[in-house]
Structure formats: structure tokens, C-alpha cells
Amino acid sequence: MLENFNLDNAIRKIPDFPKKGILFYDITSVLMSPDAFSYCLNRMDELFGEAPINAVVGIEARGFIFAASYAYKKGLPLILIRKKGKLPGQTYSQSFTLEYGEDTIEVHKADLKTDINVLLVDDLIATGGTLKAACKLLSKGGAKVHAIFSVIGLQFLNYHEVLKGFRVETLINYQGE
Picture 1 (cartoon, one colour):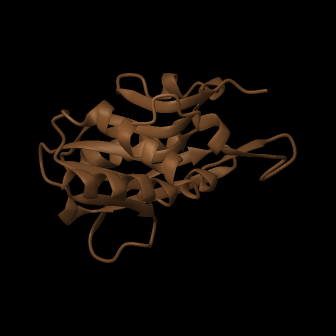
Picture 2 (cartoon, rainbow, N blue to C red):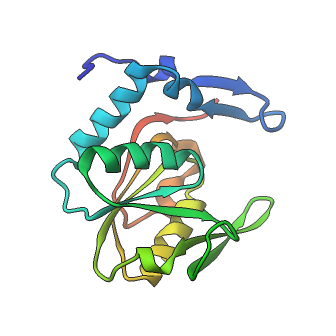
């Protein structure tokens, strides 16, 4: 374990992306650093290694990377949540509001079993809207969200209010400019 690893130094910050006034926190730089990526997976294991989870759920797209790696490491099934129309077969769907419109996410019905405990993984939590929709989506199939994990949390967007009632773990939090 890299005890004194500074994750902030591994996260690339891109000003004015995707529009002026936004500071984008880019985890692709974390993936370029074996030490940073290993740190994230090891911290996930410290947080959830003994948790009663039966599957890991990844949210499209960058959430897949951390979820898949952790699921492999723990020998657990990986469930994917994708944007509408990307999964073949029967799906559960959940629509939700974004600041610029609406979106819909889906999961295969066959992937969810009643009463499984899942770890829900994404790369970054902003407002928490996508993760809240994912929790509703998973509950449609009988899954229970044991915890939500993200590498980065943007606390200044108050995601804790949206995700109230869920255990939320992040590795680094930003307070805004």
C-alpha cells in the first residue's frame, strides 16, 4: 500500500471543459499511472474487502474501469449500467433529469437477482443524479446497494443530499474554486 500517496497530484485538472467556467477532473491520468491506479484499487479493498457484497456494478463509461478491476480482484460478478439502447435483451430502465435535459440508463434484467448486495461504482460523483437513478434502477430488479464508491467527489455540488441514506465513499473530495 502506498501510505503517503497523493492522489490529487495524479488527477489532471482541465479548466474550461466542457464549457467555460467548469474545472474538469480527469481520471485518465490516474489510469496512466500504475501507482495511482493501484492505490485506488487497494483503497477500495480496504473500504469494501470484508463487505457483504455479491456483485460489483459499474456505470458507463469510466466507472466500468474501476468496477471491472475490483470485481476481478475479488472474484465477483460485474454488472454494467449503460445508456439507453446499448444493451441487447430485456432491460430495466430509469430516466433522470440532468441540468441540460434528461437521460435514461439501463441494466440487463437477467443480471439482477433478488436480494443481492452490490457495490455501485463510478469514477466521479458530481450532483449524484446518475447514481441516484442507478440505485432506483437496481432496486427494480431486487438488488440492494450496499455502498456507492467513486474515486472523486465534488462535495460543493451537494451530492450527499441527493444520495442521503446510502453509504458513499470517495477517495478524494474537491470543494470547488
